[in-house]
Image (cartoon, rainbow, N blue to C red; front, side):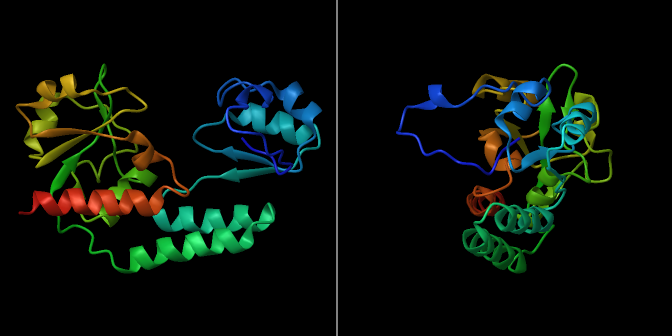
Length: 218
């Protein structure tokens, strides 16, 4: 969640930022007391009852739900226009759209992306991370499955991925976890923010993944 009344603090002055809870347990009364001009919420991360409580308190809430890279670019434009940063937002969106125009989805390695270990869950279709992976040139082996399906290691092996990407969030996969997938495919730990955090990281994420998937084709 965010707000459009900004206060620029010196580096290291995080202690001055009001604490209003997390995505699943926001302190609605504290947010209302801050009187933000705009609250940014996300359909997947924030609870419906909290969003409705904020709206009932008279706050304007912009509910975001980008499930593709193109939708994320459109969201950036919308947020930029709402917070008085249209120029910077449009420039970023145009850069992303230019990179998408160069995309050749589906010609790189077959990739499995686990998002949790016990139970084992993977990245399915109809999700931002899925589209990012495919716009970067790979094939998501769970592309025809639900958004975040629960799977077995045997099922994943049968799908014959060429590469397993181990994001360090939401589950904190580490190098030691690569051995768990050794019988499936080579595994590589990656910065989870590149896979899930849409916004200024998108161009970096596309560059990184295209380079990584390009190496897999050699």
